[in-house]
Structure formats: structure tokens, C-alpha cells
Amino acid sequence: MAPTNGHPGEQAAQDPIKLIGVRRTALSVDEVFQAVGDAAAGGIALFVGTVRNHDGGADVDRLGYSSHPGAEAEIRRVAEKVAAEYPVRALAAVHRVGDLGVGDIAVVVAVACPHRAEAFEACRKLIDDLKHEVPIWKHQTFSDGTEEWVGA
Image 1 (tube, rainbow, N blue to C red):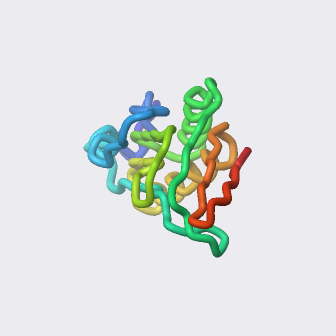
Image 2: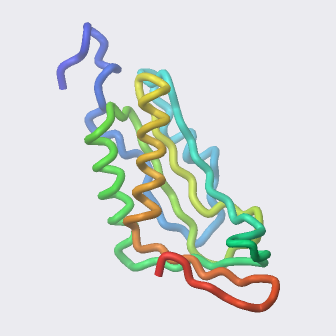
């Protein structure tokens, strides 16, 4: 990969995907942030998705995430697509499955790029595409006892 103006950090890294996962255990924002550390990155954008206490006007008590066995491979495919579109120095994405309570972390994604605008754009693309394309489904349980599948 040719450097720009003598600065190789202006380009995407050769292998920018540093961490991909679907986990049953609690997610660590620090782990994801550390995974994307890169001396050539001028901006790191990080998104943390948490379980909120409401949806569609109803109170949410808890939810469960389940995934297709190929979900991790799909996260990698989405990550590779984002890395091909932006000058990504480092990228990480992990999603939780299993039962979660209000306030728990469900997903953490981070992207490091040479500049902040690129990092913001790439991070938004990563989380948006992950939510739309990766086979991970949410089962919400509401305070009134009703339930709903989202993304199924």
C-alpha cells in the first residue's frame, strides 16, 4: 500500500480488523477500545449499544439476543466491507447474545481512521450495517408480560 505524502498512516492498514466476536459473556468497552489503538489514527469512534428500558411506548424488563451460527462470519464480512470503503487503520465489533437486563451492553463497535470525520462515518456504517445484515435477533419482554421478536 503506497503512503500518501510520505505518511503511511493516511492509508488503510493492511489488516485493519482487530477484533470480531459474538459472545455470551459481558462485553468490555476497554477491550474494544484497546483493540483499535493505532499510532497513525487521528480519530477513534466508538459506539456502545445498551439495553434501554422502553421500546415503542412500552416498558422493557429484559431481552434476549440469539444468533445464527454464521453471525460472527457475517460481522466479519460487514467489517471487511467498511474497511474497504474507508481508510480504516483498525476496526473491532463484538455483540452479546443471551439474556440481558436494562443497562447491559449489547454491542460495542469501534473504528480508528487517520481523521475524525472518517472515523465517525465508518463507525456509523459499521453499526448500521451490522444491525441490518447480521443474523442476530432480539426477544423483548415487556412489563405487562407481552413479548416481541425484533429482527426475526
